[in-house]
Length: 65
Figure (cartoon, rainbow, N blue to C red):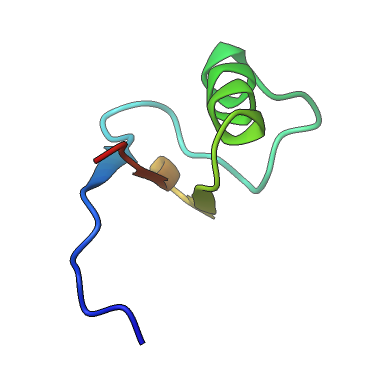
């Protein structure tokens, strides 16, 4: 087992203060397109959830090094 720690970038997005969101929208915006592009070029992970106050997402990407 490799015991080295790999540098990782973690970005958390939490929406608040907007209108109530009844659930996941039918269309996704620019942020999802950017996240998918980043994930296509790396071995990262995108976890999302929809709350009444909006989207909650965590993008995790391994960094070189």
